[in-house]
Image 1 (tube, protein in one colour):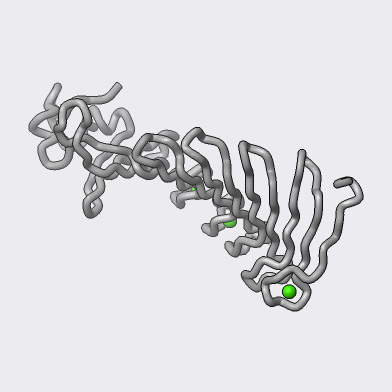
Image 2 (cartoon, helix red, strand yellow):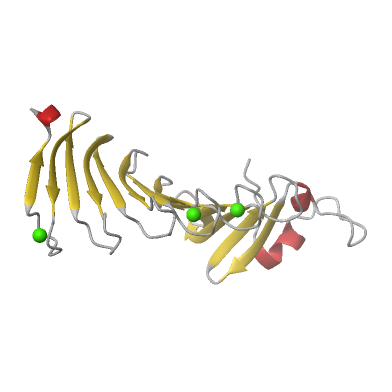
Length: 197
Ligand SMILES: [Ca+2]
Ligand SMILES: [Ca+2]
Ligand SMILES: [Ca+2]
């Protein structure tokens, strides 16, 4: 349920409710695990989902006019989560203005380096995945999807940040593989997959 109250400095005055007597008494927002502050133009709401005493979810909002009332409202643009409770973010999720997820970045081994980024269309279907299979923060595999089906994998097998191998997929199978042997970014050798017909 959305609370209808002003944010920021006005929150205390506008969202009174039962007042806490002393500073040690938690406010109703803290009881719900929600805190709110400004970061530049953005409003940040933090949540302590696992009740550890420190935030594990951060929601970033921009202020936009509500289409119905034209009054300023908050629109979620990014969510960050600490999944293992070490205080560091492991999942970042970006949202489009229509509320759909644009992309999601994951630190799968909790070392602070992003290992996978997934890009979505506005219906929530993945269109691209970027993966750092060596967990060194450097992407070396890119997967491309059409209508949810894998159509191409691009690999950096030498770890120099440049794609040198292209796998084309059809109907869930590799159709052909192109390899750049001299490092100029252009395929020199094609391998036709036996399974590809
Ligand atoms: Ca973490
Ligand atoms: Ca990592
Ligand atoms: Ca080449």
